Length: 336
Image (cartoon, rainbow, N blue to C red):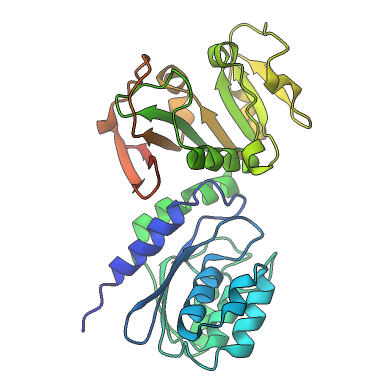
């Protein structure tokens, strides 16, 4: 039977995109595990820095599906999951296949090595989207090969590279993404637009962002807080892009603890930050589009408002479209 390896890697990619922007300073990574009859046992992703990697989350779910050992479901710490899998696997993964969008890590950082776990579980086939260029975590493929595992690389390499780009940009210099929310009729004003789940995700992105950029007009009109309260997270520093430095100091964003607020008419301050989120509509985008790496749009299934955002969508390449949430979530980039 011919196996469509691209199909299973795409499952891993789609799952990882759900957590893009949430895993900094780690990369977004997805993983799919197949059983001995090529049945899908798990499709998982890395959710947050410091938490289990995609491979560990997927192997945890696959182990449970094969054993019904619900003890493992209560384990949240990566080291605990590793220990339980290694002590109880009974060679159930020997005929499994594992697909990972990124070469499994080979070092012990905040979590144990995924490469060592895969090797010790006896998995004989591993498919990788793109090799890891981060020297601290690289060489997983070589270690797996030395442990009698067949490793196949460059499965949907271009798509895997697009998923990894934000992480690589933060290693090289900085990653900048532009986020907005709109209704089906393209409007961006008139009150809350996106769902509560989408708003929590945005707050989680703010929690791991170093800097949030917003326009002066939006600050004056909306009087925002721009914190991460929906996830009990930290608030990023804020750059208000404005020609005038005069603002009502009772606006909530000026009273968030442990943050810096800059009011500038240039983007020079961005050189001091690594992971940067810009929020706004088409007017703000016109000012910053040359420095934006990726665009993120939440499209709510509703109508209303009066201010229509105007983007030439033909100039964007769609990287991932998630229709599983209440809102449609689209990651995209400018066409070269």
